[in-house]
Every structure is written in structure tokens, then in C-alpha cells.
Image 1 (tube, helix red, strand yellow):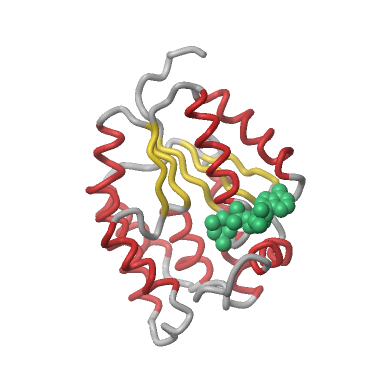
Image 2 (cartoon, rainbow, N blue to C red):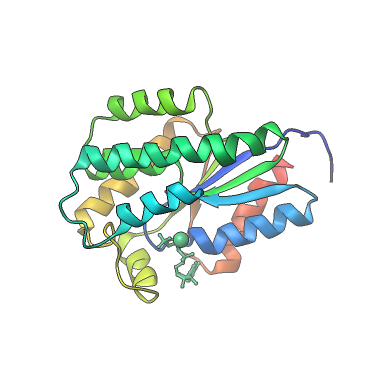
Length: 210
Ligand SMILES: Nc1ncnc2c1ncn2[C@@H]1O[C@H](COP(=O)(O)OP(=O)(O)OP(=O)(O)O)[C@@H](O)[C@H]1O
Ligand SMILES: [Mg+2]
């Protein structure tokens, strides 16, 4: 393994419901550890004690009165805490950070899905993150029906999973549109084949990063 990259990299895994984010997070984690990387694994919304409380509110299917701006601001509130408490200290210590969802999900769900202006999200992104952006974002891409079917087999739907197909198609389109304009920062992975085929595609990208 070459050691050309000594600085920790910030990797995020994105996609609509049930595309296999958690499944492939575990694969990426194991692969990076085998490659000798020191890494932390975390998720959004959440990743801190306070952030996990905000996550519970955000995902609560009974929380039907939440307005769109509240949802957006809670996402960034949790993110601010996550960055200060977990992500920045790890990156500053030279560790790799692997995060299940990050700001691309905010653009996709609150922007594409809910219809909040992308420029408002960009302002919050700049405020909370400064210039920090992930080094690599895997966008796992799958038709909405298949993802919802995979996710549905697992647990009761959360507040987002109650949304309609039209909402998720806008979310999916937003991930793909963002990846298309910045191809160096994103890898769009076809999540429809078998788990091992998906992981093979991810591995090709990881091999170029270490
Ligand atoms: N390539 C695949 N083919 C078939 N089934 C898969 C594949 N990848 C993951 N799965 C299965 O689909 C289900 C959902 O996967 P997973 O929980 O990893 O998705 P997720 O994107 O993390 O979902 P969520 O958006 O709810 O967090 C799991 O039961 C998982 O085993
Ligand atoms: Mg998951």
C-alpha cells in the first residue's frame, strides 16, 4: 500500500432510502482498516449525543407539524455540533472520517425534496462548514421502488420514508445532478446489482484514494 496520502480523507456515503448506505459503510470501514488507515465512522443526522437527540426528533414519524425551515435548521444544528465535536478533531488528528449521509443529503432532501432554495442551503453550508467539503462522496443510485422495498423489509417507516415517490425521485435527481457537476468529488455507484458487485465498484474508487 503506498503512503502518498498521509492526511486523513473525509468520505461520505449518500443516496435515497434503502440503497445500501449502511451495508456499504461497513464494507468501506473494513477495507480502510485493512489498508492501515485510522478512521472514525459516524452518521448524520446525529454522530454526537446532542445530534442523536435531534435525529430522533427529525426522524420521528409522529412529528408531522415540523415545517420545512425547522427541518433544515435542525439538520445544520446537528451538523455544527458534529463538526466541532467529532469530524474536525478527527481530521485535524490526521484520521479518516467515514460518514453515513452529510450535506449532500440536505441539498437532496430539504432542497430537491422539500423545495427550499439551494442558495439558502449553500449559505448555511458556508456558515457551518466554512470551506470543508468531503474529499469523496459515494452516491449509491437505485430506482426508488427497489430502495423502498429493501428498506421496508427492515423496519417501520421513519418520517422521511412516509414521503411519496415524487419526493424521492426529486431527491435522487438532486444527488445525481450534484455529482454530475463535480465528477471529481463524487462517485456514482449503481446500487442495483448484488452486494458484492456494488462493493467491487466501491473498491475501485478506494484503491485510488489510499
Ligand atoms: N446490492 C444489494 N442487493 C440486495 N440487497 C441489498 C443490497 N445492498 C443492501 N441490500 C439490503 O437492503 C437493505 C437496506 O440496506 P441498508 O440498510 O444498507 O440501506 P440504507 O441505504 O442504509 O438504508 P437507510 O436509507 O434506511 O439508512 C438491507 O436489508 C440490505 O441487506
Ligand atoms: Mg442506513
